[in-house]
Length: 424
Image (cartoon, rainbow, N blue to C red; front, side, top):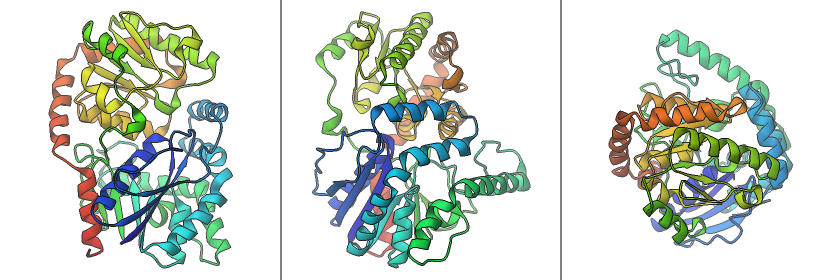
């Protein structure tokens, strides 16, 4: 088949699509992948191992400075719907037209379309051209069920879950429904009535790119919703290798705690300095060695020593197995990368979706309660680190879950589901 794929977001929204695109291309399909990176130009020189046609659209969407402003605004907003609205208004709307034009051409040129569940321009374009469309969902909190709800209150019973989903749908549609309907109106299409079930989910096939260790298929989900597992890929060239200086640090003492906020780490020197101070103080208070990931720690006045190693970037795939635990923001990709490495987590959330992953990590027994970035102190973080390091049962459970995850292959499962559904 000729398959067109499109995604938007940060690294955690793009890496799964790169993995799936390579898997489909290796299976004999002709794949085109359109990437719109929210906050980085790191994909400008990316090449495909198997010959996927990769094209960047309007990337990065915003400058590093603007991304930081949006991040600060978002994690200081308590209402999750306002968080989403702020991110879309600042980071999606400015390039919506360009992504929509590209999506329409992608739909004309291909037999099958696959999109990030947020990628409503592709969903609209696929429907207009009457092409089958697959949605890839990166967190299992957007598929309604009478057996679970997005808030994690899973002992409410059928009617309790239904009420929460009704409120959730109402809130999401009130804030977001005008986005796809604006594009549908441009093409003379009838408006859609529900974001969750008519845009984010596909009646052809919705792939939940979440490990079964976190996500069990609910009995009332339609047959079109399938759990494929974590869409992971071996370390990409652009992510580099463990540098010699870091290897020396690892060899010089006990395994460290890795600390990263991913794309949520500030770049602006004053904010970055404050965050580095918070993380450094937390590591010192917890009495642990640490690797702290930050864009430009030397410019902030921080120098590595035998206890703390500062690095601008490191391949998580390679470094996490050498650590005791990982402090992270609760992104879908980082969460599952940490887990498949067999390490417990300390989660510092910036967004409501990250709170979901914080709850999931605690539910399966490999983390304590998550923390909120907006009011985080070094003492709070140090206590959470000490709790994890002094709870061997968390590490044992993390190793057990990792062994199960390593037997899964989300890419192969997704490719098989796609080929079965479309009788290839």
